[in-house]
Length: 471
Image 1 (cartoon, one colour):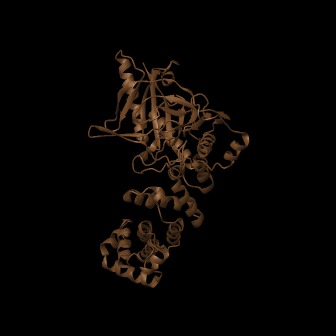
Image 2 (cartoon, helix red, strand yellow):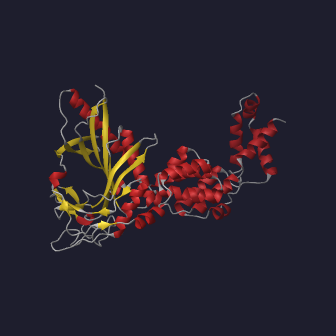
Image 3 (tube, one colour):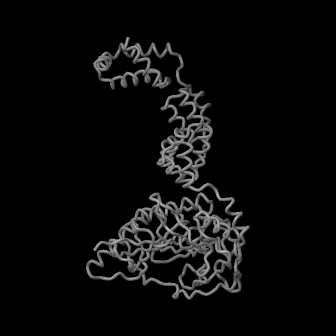
């Protein structure tokens, strides 16, 4: 039997609000444990939650960017379960009237993965297991979340990864979440089943919880589908269950029987009144939506003339986008600007372990280097060396080049004098070139550049050597 994968993702993203969803506690990441929680977010008796208006705005913003219909009449519900990281023993969420419905993300193939719904809810705390003990940090309790639920439209591990990446990009560009997976602000539950490729009957699914990397999402879909197929081929049956994904072993392990909505005994949240949105509110948010990733990519290709690959790489992070657009505007050279970002910028980010948003040099500095290089006022080697100082020390490129005498030698007579000496001192390379080995000229160019301390344009040196050798 041939099988097809049926996969859906439930993606949780923490919102970029300064305070929590139902109280004024800070959402800042990395604070000392249990220093950002209060009576409300820890569910003390007699406290009343108050909805953060910014959460609603961000939810509508995300929904519009993902082509969703916005629910005008909203209500919250209580999801009841006991777990140590949930001190109230219930989570305020939205089951019956989620704020967004019926959206989609379009993959590069043109296939659309439907978004069933987006709902607002509060995050739980975090457990730490150390030395046989479990510690609880309640700082994350009440941090605002959007849960974005796809339809079971994903058919391959690669589609699962692409959906999650495109979703991250949209959320970042909208400014609703930083989507830092290493900090837990974007994580996914992966639902997988397999079925006969000729059947419309869905198989029994399993769910893998809290996966926090795109590679792990893809690997989880791949390994779990293979596990289910092997089980069915050997006469077994897939159980409806929740599984724990182990990144180190690239496999999942059964945790518990899968809970469904009735197990949580949902009922309407009594402490928060219904939320009613009007058309004017929704349209004002729609009006402020920024240019989204796919739109940017098309514009970069159609209007700026860079390749689709370059556009896709630049649009992986807003910091790259801002740097590229400012640099390209200053230089008038989009392709060269893209090359520098994808080359030297990303190289030094990787080498230094710096995040893109932590870059402290200006687009003006990068533009100066590109302009001086294209005007043949500095060599490419000098340009790279100067950018390294710009990246780490934020120097002014033009001043640094001048102070260190790195501008190219414009004295043609001096270049011709050095060329003549090199030709005279390297007869073997000259003979090889004149016998048809054109690559030999590279050696001669290198010798001249070395003698001039890199202060000459390689094309100029090549031109002068070629002229001398053809006389």
